[in-house]
Image 1: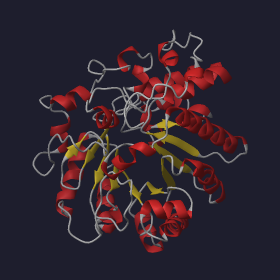
Image 2: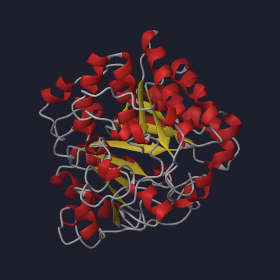
Image 3: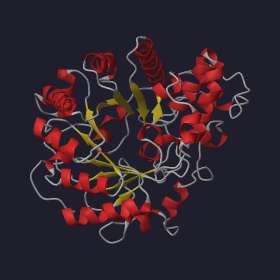
Image 4: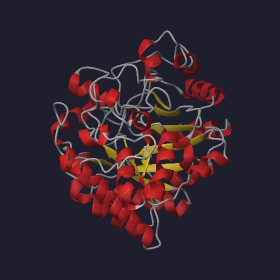
Length: 419
């Protein structure tokens, strides 16, 4: 997760994180990415049921009817263990978490144990009453997925009217005083609609948006050929930075983040080297705090059936099941080879990663994407769009090098099939 507004527009300084000691339990949510102890933010896909049929669903969700494998009482026990272990945030997801009637109760239970509770939802089931209930139980944030304008969104979601229902859900959250933001997964079919997303941020006074790079997982695997190429990804980042800065300069700043491609951090830094060298030094320090991809370390996932994964996208590797063994015991078990290696990936990475000057602030990027394309957990991520000149230039860690790194190579070397 790369905070474009925090890094590029100066909405965060290293001193902000240091003031809280950089401990997960004390940091406010907007600074958690800079924590030192990397206690995992936990994504709980609490159900596989969903009322929509999204063509890029990583969970390959099913219809809204049926039962869930984890009961309310079992959910409470899971939450107790997570809280005792020091998990700072639990993100309730699905499927569609709002199809579970006990969601408000379990969110309240997490809050009562000292965790921050947030949800990721398609927004279509958010009524005024439900939004008020979620506000009352102490939910911190609601992330609502949009894929573009009405026609594009409804096509991706497989249900006519999903766009209007999602906007209505946003309005219900705002009316209830519940913080709400947008989630947008970028691909070739909707990248041109990013200006519309920024218009919504301004016009509807939405404070936050996360732009997700495509991960080849679940039904999203069928979209590999529709991912942006490297040149288009670089253009995307520049456009997001420009639009974020424009909002900032116009006096209506928004929190803008990109997710699931940690090459974005070095790319922001390289641009700042050309535009504002002083700010570039501060950004490099924040990127070191961030440490890049944290799957299996700073983020974890519990699936609808209790299995534990390194993140919500990477489901072909399970490390245990919380219905049989507590998450805390699984997460720190040195006898699980892959999970142990994810705690420090550097000795195991192959391809360009070992010789990349940005390894310590990228963390080797996304392992799920590398495995999906190369069949090798430790291969380079094919979505890394940094050029050979950029990753090899001198002085990266210190910021002493020229650092503008041969941008003429943008878009070359896709690095793997499917990109």
